[in-house]
Length: 410
Image (cartoon, rainbow, N blue to C red):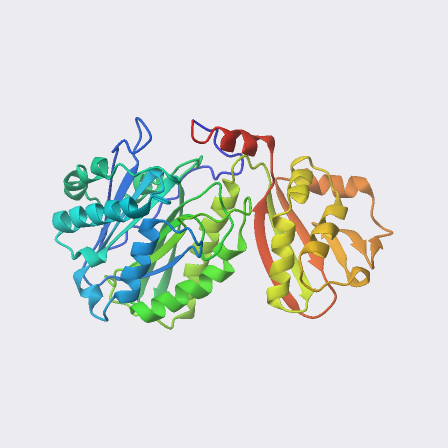
């Protein structure tokens, strides 16, 4: 099913820097889709460290379980061998029993043989329909071709190969000067529906030529994930296949372990990619930022923010450009986090809508309606209780979301 490009999409795929020590290739294996690439391979040089965060779903896919096990068992010297990622779209290899494990083993063995890397350093991911056996033989027969066509400049093609219902390929980058050298970061992501973070969201791969040991790399990734990908939602549904991996090739020779500038640059890339996922939300026409302040704690602020962001009533009101602030009040009241009706204030953009348990005396419906007509919408909520704050991002919910998901398997 060909979908029209999201009206919230960027004009074009960004010009991402080549990451030294990293190469990509893609192929059309026919896993599900016809006449389009659906498998990508990324191979990294010896010295590469790998970190990852994955879905906490109780029905995690076979590739997720395999990646988690390999990262948990990795020795301190594992990075000396290099690493590879293989990702297919069209089939999630989830809820496929022991066959799913066999598929992962067959694929990783083939990649290991072709790239001369240890099998424990081959990481895979699959995205697409749940509960259908992965035709892994179609992928295995393409492995040598993938290895033979590796290209340092192939990241855009890789971003395109991992898409499912995405309407545009997603990429972001940053560069930071450390000493007299430039360190680069480049990342790609796929995601459009089944987006409700419970670690990361969908499939995300970020690469840097910085030199960072696995432990600090993992700590940095986990911290920044909670402030970026774990603050977005499209439809409140958490995927069985969510994977976010960060790979540091070390090719620049620059140790960025404790460099604040590098950490901020990495956060910028992760936030950019997470926002692109929301902007490609299935059927989305509005990008919504929800800022919650004055909560009892940051955790409470996030609970309130996600309650608003996940409310079908709030999201459909936004789709209809209806400034129905009562639905925001409803979402706050049901969230389970502490709130006091008579201390609450709500703003749409710079328009104060409600305060002290009632509509603001300065508010007029036309003012709120004008805010809802914008493509990027800001909702601000102050609980008036303490200084806890959080920001989350979401999109509206339209008829097109139903159409896309009703036809997803056809």
